[in-house]
Image 1 (tube, one colour):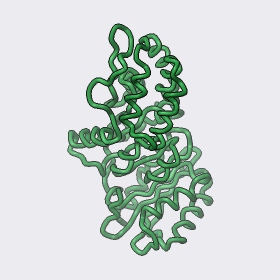
Image 2: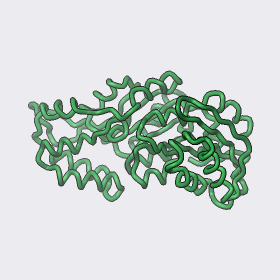
Image 3: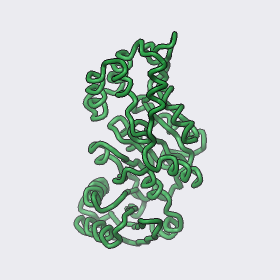
Length: 312
């Protein structure tokens, strides 16, 4: 979303270890497109620091989306994380954060492990890659993959589930985000058998996923009920927001694949994490480190946020 606000201002948040390198990179990129820093604040925390800048983009030589793209490209290799948010969105306190699961919250892609167990590894791998890269509609790819798993015993699912590895910092990040008052949600195309388990491990508030039924101790190869397609992910977030009396500007979405772009691009702040290039390009924020704590760093600006709101 790109509501810049009445003054045409955006907010840049950059997290890094090299104070001067980050500041020089961000301001240098802004100078190139005639965007002016109106106010800047910075604070140290742990082994990194966070810089927050209000930027006047009203006379920039390019659209704010292009400013964001330039900043993300320039900051890769310099920053741990960077975000560019419209002024109207930044004014709104974030109340909900939604995560994709496979490759975002857990390291594994469970569908790939299921494929190996079913002896259909290569076929399912190709379908998964095509869906993640946006070359094949998610619904078609998902149904074809699930059908290939028909007859797989529940014991195989239990074994795979027991091997899951949380991404570094995931448990700490979810805990900190909840302390900050955000409602945490998983929205995933993964099987309910896996998604609800991971949601329980992390203590998230809600899980939205695909229900793939088991009958007689084996997968049926079907999908029971509505599918969690890309448009259903954003619908789930919107539904949560409406329950809380909030709107999408007060929501954050985090993902890594093309099927996450719809939710990432239709909330107040969309974060690409451990993501494919197409997602890095389309998101308003990118976390370059593999730790989920980089997500927290973008949102937990504390006093810095209060200092800059008057300039939006």
